[in-house]
Every structure is written in C-alpha cells, then in structure tokens.
Image (cartoon, rainbow, N blue to C red; front, side, top):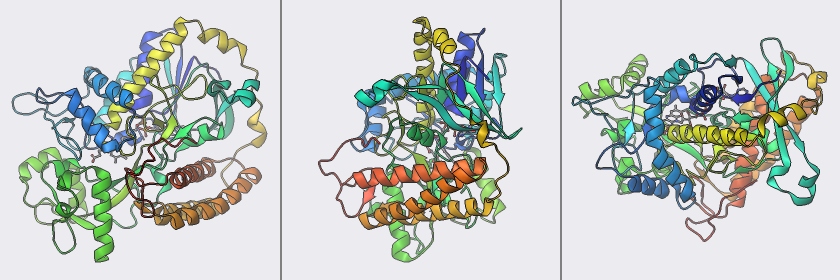
Length: 537
Ligand code: FAD
Ligand code: SIN
C-alpha cells in the first residue's frame, strides 16, 4: 500500500495535521491508522480543558511564566513562547470546526482554573472537553474524501534505512523513514504502508503503570518504535502522576476527578479530615501537580491509608452539576453523593512529559518522520507539564508539522522521494500472524512490568529502587524478546514489548538524572543541584 501522507493516530494531534493536509492537497491521499476505533484516544478522556490566553486580564507573559515555573528549569523557552502565542489561534480553529466550549451568562467563554495557573484560562466543555474536541475533529474530517481511516490496524514498526553516513557521522538526518509495517487486525496480515511523509501521533504510555488514567491504547508504541529505529528520545523520567484519580480498587483505567474541581474550590483532606495541602505549599490545593501528588503520597504513607479525600461538600451544588455532570454521575454510580460525602482519590500515572525528541517544526531526528502530541517531546513541558497545556501543544505542533510538510513539498522533495524508494523494504510476511498462543505469558509479564514500575519507579524514587527495577526489566526484556522471536506477532505481544522499552527508557533516564527535579523525585539526590539538562537517549 502506498499513500502521500501517513498519520498514525486519531487523537487531537493526528487529526489536526490530517485535516490541514487534506484541505491543502485535495488531489493527494492521506491514510490515518488507528489501533482500535477512530475515537478511542487519550484525547477523548480529557476533562479539565485546554489552556489559552483569552481574557483581557491575562497575558502571554503570564502563561509563559506559569509554564516555565511548572517545568522546573527544563522547558525550552522558545517552544513555550511558540505554543502560548500560537495557541489561541489553534483554539479558534477548532471552534470553527464546531467545538463548543462553555460560556457564562454574558455569553463570554467561561474560563476555569487549574493547578499552577496564575489566571483563569482553561476553556472547557463541562467535564468532557476532550470528547467534545474529538467529536468536532472527527466531524470536520468527514468533509474530506481524500482521507482514509484504517482502524483496528496495529503499527508494529517504522520502516527505516540507515545511510552509510550514519555510522561515520552519527548525524541525525542519516536515518530515513519510508512508512510503517502494520499488523492488520482485520485480516491478521503484516502489511507495508509506504509514504514519503509519516506522522507519529500515537499518544501516551500510562499503561506502563498499574494505576493510570490512560485508556488501554496508551502503550507508548510510537516512542518504542523510534527508539528501536535509533531515533532520539528525550526526558522519559518525567512521568506525571495526576493527584486525583477516583480510588476504585481493581478498576482500570482509573476515572479522573479533574483538577478543575479543585480550581472551583474542592479541598484535599487526609483520612482524619485534615486539609493537609497548606503544610506543603502556599498555593495549597492548586500547587503544580508534582507537588500535590507527592503531598498525597506522603499523607498516604504517614497514615497508612490507600487514598485521601476530595471534599466538595461546601461547594455550590448547582454550579458543580453544571460544570461536572460526568463526575457527579460517576460518583453516584458507585454510591457517592458528592454533596454529602467526600470522594476517595489517589494519584495515578497520567501523562508522559518526555518522548520522541522534536524540533520547532515537529521534525524528529529521523528524516521524513514527524511526531506530535503526547508521544513527542517538544520542550514545552520540561520537568513537569502545566495542567491543560497538552491539548494546546498537540494542536500547535499538528499545525507546525503541516506547515513544514508544505514547505518540503514546495521545495520539490515530496514526489521524487516517493518514487525512488518503494522497493527498499524487506518482506516481513515471513513472520506471519495469529492469535497469541502464549497469552498467559504475555498477560503475566504485563502485570509484572506494571508492578515493577509502580513499586520502584513511582512518585518517589531512589537509587536502589531504580537499580532493582532495571534488573527486573532486564529479565522481562530477555523473556519477551525470546517470545517475540518464537511466536506469531500479535498486538498484545507488540504492546508488551513496547511497554518494556518505555519502562527501560524511564528507568535509564531516571538513573542518569542525579538530582530531584520536577516530576523526578529521588530521595538520594537533592532538588535543584547544578545538573540541569535534558536527558536524551
Ligand atoms: P491520543 O489522543 O492518545 O491518540 C493516540 C492515537 O494513536 C489513537 O488513535 C491510537 O489508536 C493511535 N495509536 C497508538 N499506537 C498505535 C499503534 N501502534 N498502531 C496504530 N495506532 C496507534 N490534557 C489537557 O490538555 N487537558 C485536559 O483536560 C486533559 N485531561 C486528561 C484526562 C485524562 C483522563 C487523560 C488520560 C489525559 C488528559 N489530558 C489532558 C492529556 C491529553 O488528553 C493527551 O495528552 C492528548 O489527548 C494526547 O493526544 P494525542 O493526539 O497525542 O494522542
Ligand atoms: C484534569 O482535568 O485535571 C486533567 C488536565 C490535564 O491533564 O491537563
């Protein structure tokens, strides 16, 4: 199969790119590949909203400063400026596609507040903002008959060629991407899809932990593929734990209680009913997420409780119902009336601040390969992401990848390359595919991996724990590679393999960082030492 533009992923990042390319080149074909259905994405589950400078009291400078403070010295300031300044235009664009954000009685956008923001600047659609954005994007996509979706299709690897120069110069542009190998779940065949331009928009990797807000699809596939292809991956130690996932043992993924609830006045209390955040930070419940998650972790350890509480009983229930109907309904469904009872919450893996290293045009270190959205590390988040900055980042870099593609086509690099390379790839069908016979081995190894990562590489880390995690991951890696070589390819086995790679990258980057910074908190190394650099693997 061959196409003009290949997009892996149908969340906010992939769809933003695809819509723009389809509009600009009506005579060219775009393929979007998804693992399951088109709308099953992290994007669909986003609750709080999308941050953007919208109000006259707010300013780009304030949003930039808040992002830099949260990022704890590791943000790329140029990228922060780009995202903050271009963000409002991208928000206007999705509004023009039909996305509806809540308005107040005066007809102005109602702007929410979340941790780390010095102003109200979160546009939202009740507590289901991502669902609304995904709906609007998928509706807009339907206008273009040059876009084809291939759903239930698992991308196994990117097709690359390493040019001779790579060995000599280790130059970043000496690896070229020609498309992807996919396992088509509809017909159980390995197929090649060739394209002169490939965009990875594969989302996050929360499934590497036992407790996560991320859906099943979030297995870090894009990051693992790029690492296997010897592309650059950066800052993987910075995994963001959301402080307030609903505590519901045995339920996965965890249901999120958006930070916007604290923005509207919700208060965290420990099992004795004490409002503990004032002991940890003067911003109390609205301190940046790393601080709140660590404070909760500490309270849980001190009291031996498995969760803390989010108290909303004092809040105006009419407003609560209007802003958070989904949370209200979910809580009721498990017997919690938020007007009378506190909500049990605990932290859960939520967002990967690191990922495939990209530049200001969303280019990766591999030629003809872009990455945008959560799988990319643009430099915006540094050591800790400011709440609601990721939907914004995904739109800004989906757009920037589009602009760079246009530029490339205008320079005549597109079609020529397309024709030249089609016979370069080896035939992978030799591997064959089927339902994995050894499913119990796969599911058991996945559980072990999630346990290792949660026990040793969670919110609070130390050198011994990281070392233990690495040794255990090594064994899992060896066993899984053996399984991969001896059994038929399946999505479950590929996901396990990818998650082990991502786990390895998180631990390895964590071992390299001999300091505590942002989301990486290592009790053996104090905060704010002189080591301030991105860790690139
Ligand atoms: P996704 O939306 O995750 O899409 C990934 C796509 O890649 C899917 O289509 C999937 O099928 C495809 N894919 C992945 N691997 C493969 C493969 N191997 N083969 C084929 N296809 C593949 N951010 C905010 O800014 N504001 C919020 O309020 C907010 N709330 C959140 C709430 C929750 C519960 C969660 C989980 C996240 C939240 N986030 C929020 C983060 C934000 O939603 C994500 O970072 C963002 O949506 C990621 O978008 P994306 O386009 O990069 O990837
Ligand atoms: C939330 O709604 O609390 C999540 C926001 C985010 O992850 O940016």
